[in-house]
Image (cartoon, rainbow, N blue to C red; front, side):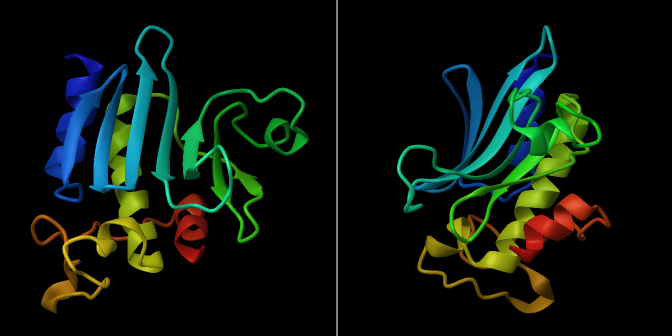
Length: 171
C-alpha cells in the first residue's frame, strides 16, 4: 500500500482531525486552521519528520511545537548523545528553546502513525491547545472523557507508559 494512504487512513480513522489530505509531498492532518500535523515520509529510505505545528507560536520562523524525526542534526550534542540516534523527539520549552529526548519512532509508517495519534491526543488533553480552540470549544470534556469541539466525539487512546508521551503530556 502507498505510504500516504496508510498515514492518511490512520489519521482520518482516529477521528481527531478536522481534515486529512495529501499536501504536496506530505500528509497534513488539520486540527484547526492554525494547528496541524505534517507527515513527510520517504518510503525509499524510511526517513521521516512528523511535527505538530502551531502557526500562533510567538517565535519567528520554525512553528513546530513538537515532533519526531531522524535527521542527524550534526553538531547538536544533545541529539547525538541520545539512545537510538539519529531518531529523536523534540519539543519546545516554555522559552521556545528545543528540548531533545529519545524516540521510539523508526520510520515504520503504520506503527509510527499509531504512536503519533496517541501522543498528539495526550498532548491535547493536557494542554488545551489547537483542536480545542475550534467550533467554540474551550477544551471541555463531555461525559465519558470525550473531547468536545472536535468534528465528532473522540475518545483518545490511553496514555502509554512511554517517557516521550509522559514528557509531551507534561508540557
